View 1: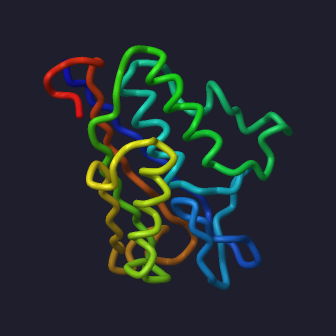
View 2: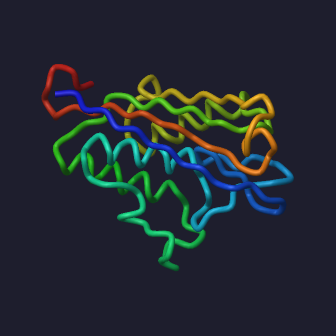
Amino acid sequence: MIRTGIGYDVHPLAEGEKLIIGGVEIVSTFGSVGHSDGDALIHAVVDALLGAAALGDIGQFFPCDKDMWKGAPSSHFLADAVKRVREAGFEINNVDATIVLQKPKLAEFISQMKYNLAYSMQIDESQVSVKATTTDHLGFVGDGSGWAVQAVATICKKNDDCCP
């Protein structure tokens, strides 16, 4: 049995904030505004994994109105989601994510993002895809006021032929 989940996250950008994407801090004059560390890549992956296992969404487990999550590293959310998915009897087969950000360019950081995600999910890097694109200066991403990430995850029941 193969199951698929979709995750989507958006955060505003502001001067003086840190820009953390996939656990990589990127030097930039602006960063992601969020209750936690604002890592929309990890947030979208968490939602994709939880959705694939029909376990809910990131807000159910890590609500933004709880001070205990203020400034928290998103890697904590990912580790928790992976644990929940595995406890439900599933293994992660594949994760594919697209970062939508006008600037800065992310090509030099993609391999570290993939490594960080794979390490956190305890899967092989070949099971993780991270891509980046712009909106050619259209919309809130194009004008630099925000960024977005869409992620898809496939999971399968443990011991199925489709599982790695």
